[in-house]
Length: 597
Ligand code: GTP
Ligand code: SPV
Ligand code: MN
Picture 1 (cartoon, helix red, strand yellow):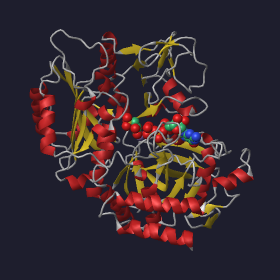
Picture 2 (cartoon, protein in one colour):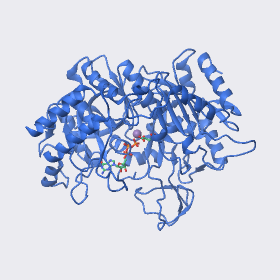
Picture 3 (cartoon, protein in one colour):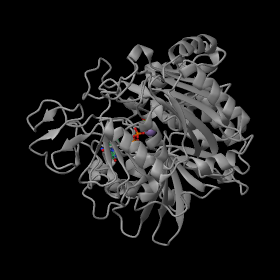
Picture 4 (cartoon, helix red, strand yellow):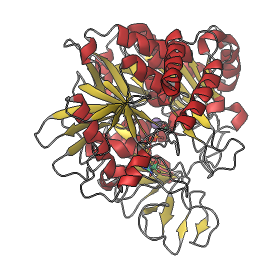
């Protein structure tokens, strides 16, 4: 029970529908977290890590290891509002199906009421959600990745607004039955549902990541993108970093890269150029709106990182490793060593002679399958990051100077280019994507999956309206000269033999340096058909082993490839239907003209 009538009524309604054994309101305390973890350990679902006090390992069901885009729905009243890139079901029909599934689905379980704030508690830019979940694992993860409990209830008061987020793993227990393993429903009964007009989320059947931690992708991106459109701000799949030059001047940069394309890495990067410093504000999501001074300000709505473990090492992401080394972390689907530590492919230490793999089986270096799932994750508090910026929780956000966009493009797209202006930047955002590589057996090898602003799976409405919203933000800027500058980066360019041309990771600071120099009016650039490009010597290569020839290749514009790109962009735009913003057609026409000019 709370002081909030609407909340109480909703909790009552859900309790009657889902029929949990009991209802517990989460207060967010350490004691509560500890006792929930103990419960999970006693049930055999969590393993305390001897080598990492305060840390726990979970193994999910092998079918429940990542977001399920084909079971994710935008149930707007009208199908055309969901657009061609989302799965749509009529909301009434979906609710009927789900009401059937939710009936009695929490039998034998506890329903947790988890109030959470996306953004610092009480910030004018923050929003409140309430997740009702039957998963203690979810409650523990939410306590790390968001701000939960009593402080949020205080701000909510008796009539505050909140986004209702209903979650069930979809596995009721018979009397006396206990969980033997990670509970979830079979694939055809998983529904990650969003009702954008109602601003409501109903998630059923999965316990994992973005399917279950509803504050993250479901609220902070899909529902928030709809709120942002209506209220004139932006909810984006972006990291936020602070970079300080040797003169001590700080700039803030956001970056939109698709899932598993390097946001966490860039947000925590250790610069290789002397005198420069990078600090972290956020690693996955940015909410941005104009401040009184006319600049665009961003907050990180999250409080922790849910990062890709596989491939993370002191070498590739030192600060992420230090963050998890500080304890209080949850690991999902990594290997467990015999002495009680975690191990994954790419962690930077030799594979132990024996471990228990992510499926719970004995594993040795001779085993065929990897020890950790490719999408294994760590959940860890942002406050523990050694390079967390001191203003990362500033309730007013941080002023953004530059927006980066990028994906994995082995060819065509140079290391970095800058858009001519805001609208050209929106065009670049609309064409970004990743090439499907030879690493997967796929008939579409070499083809580009377009992922506008890395938001393809996260736009809560029509993709054309989303891109129009980007144009509108530019058109309505209080002072267009203060808009962030947009840069398209590509760390993933390869040579003919398939070798990376750019070393990436900490060396990306060299590109960031040029970006900042462009923002302060110093960086050297030439005007090209595709945008402003650094001159051959504009990117600082002091102490870096990248030859002039490789640099020239990294910055090359191959006209034939770009004309193919134009054709592919047109083909892609055609799939967006008749409401494609006219400005995008103008932009692609202008690009073609410049290339043929
Ligand atoms: P989500 O959490 O899924 O949104 O992913 P993310 O965008 O935060 O990606 P993350 O930083 O976890 O990186 C994913 C993969 O990209 C890792 O395997 C990294 O090793 C690799 N990666 C990151 N930065 C670079 C880079 O600069 N160059 C190369 N070649 N690989 C990189
Ligand atoms: C992503 O897939 O972009 C993630 C992980 O950040 S999840 O929270 O599962 O969406
Ligand atoms: Mn992400």
